[in-house]
Image 1 (cartoon, rainbow over the protein chains, first blue to last red):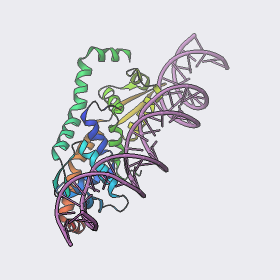
Image 2 (cartoon, each protein chain N blue to C red):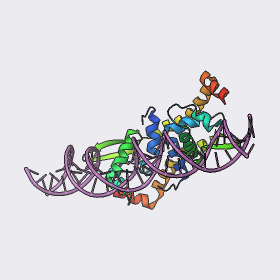
Image 3 (spheres, chains in turn red, green, cyan, purple):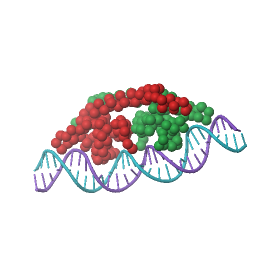
Image 4 (spheres, rainbow over the protein chains, first blue to last red):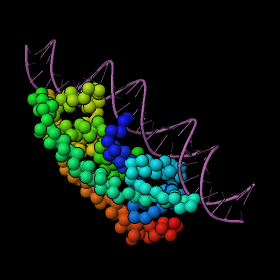
Length: 110
Length: 110
DNA sequence: TAAAAAAGTTAGTTGTTACTTACGTTAGTT
DNA sequence: AACTAACGTAAGTAACAACTAACTTTTTTA
């Protein structure tokens, strides 16, 4: 699949319950990957590491090095962007449907 | 996977670009499955039918019978619920982190 | 009643993803 | 320099998801 819109990465990342749980953990505090993993008893640390990469690719978390540790934290801005996206995506679609000739054609074909 | 939270179904449904495109089509007008399918040139009608079921299971679309046709329309309320969910999910997580004993333990272990 | 139209369902295929185990890497410690 | 801690990466696996082709169901029309 081709990710034409950046929000695809965000929605895909959030669709997984485990990643939402991780995001909650690092929402208000920095945490290391090991520490995050310690909060789950049914998954290994590498799995958490892979989830963190998905979250980072979606810009939902950021990280900083601290010696041999790496501290992760949620990126609140991206969540704000998502909310704006959800508010505008279908609204803009509506405008296009009402204005566009292509849409008018579709309506006629109904 | 067990869908403990109803929002799982919503987020999973929206994570698929094709389903968002379908949702946009039926956002401001009712459409039949065939008519929706006619808007895509790279997917068959049964595939659209299956997507519509996913959207309906997530309560993102509703439908009504009209003779042999079935008209689909977006359920705007569910999108409102999603926005509220996104606004509250991490906020409530934060409160629990600050108040809960379990969370305090996690912080200590940092 | 037979045929057509509109739609849903099933079986099977292919691609994707969440996961584990094993390994590699980097930065501090002894 | 060897050792350890923290972390990422790679390979392989099992489950899931998106799709197509073929089939069935329901309603209208000839």
